[in-house]
Image 1 (cartoon, rainbow, N blue to C red):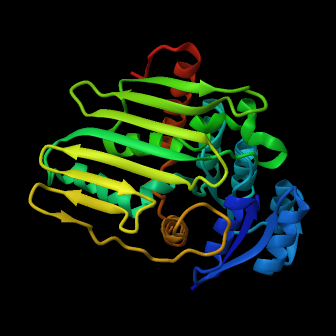
Image 2: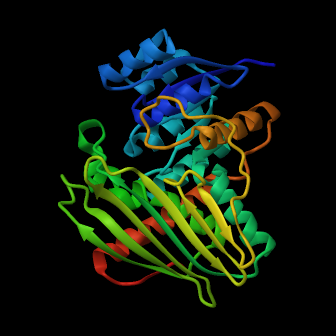
Length: 343
């Protein structure tokens, strides 16, 4: 098996989580990392034994030239680092959200097409067993038509390097950074909505996160009724929580990340917990999630595609850009108080 040399830009909580998972894949060698903060570089050197660490991801790309680049830097750097890596002949995995604007997303897609390399965006719910179960259940119609879907993603305040999460110009608010997972799940499972309407609790947009708690209504003429709640305003000690509640014609499917049995099906005859794959157990990465398994599956998919020379199909750059388009529409609705059409 050919050894894939991987470099990672961004060694904060998400970058370290990816790094700690990457080193567990056979045939993968983490050769270098980059982060602006010394404490993050020191942790990577100590826990991952990475010898070559840089302050700037651009320097890593120029000097190391890995086979694969992992971009886990702040959102406002995604476009630059991704395009630079692709132009240098690297396959690139970029964390969500894809980029801050649609124009930046388009630039990333053009860079991929010009490079002959692959680009995949980290919309990890497409690899999460409970969301895969929901996707399959909607697709195969085993319980009839999906009638209503309610999603929730709730947790504490995120700050980030130099407070970038709290500045809407750089982070886009929790609608664009945290809630975007559920936006992507809606598009993946239900298709593109006709419009979105958002109401939110809004704080200072430069220093306190802007729309810190939001409620989105996705309009699908003829059904289903779809609604999602997102927050980044819970007090210290509140556990990160992800849930969905899906009502079908003949059953209800519930997911709750805080339950021991995370997935439950009520079909009118019995109550049961479908068996789900859990390819890896939790590691001390500092993230507020219970399993690294979905991230391992996401990484494995991309690495396998690189080895086989087959473009990743579960999360294409074009589909990730549509998620950005929808999240941007949600942000416009929050600001205007009006429904925003997507068709």
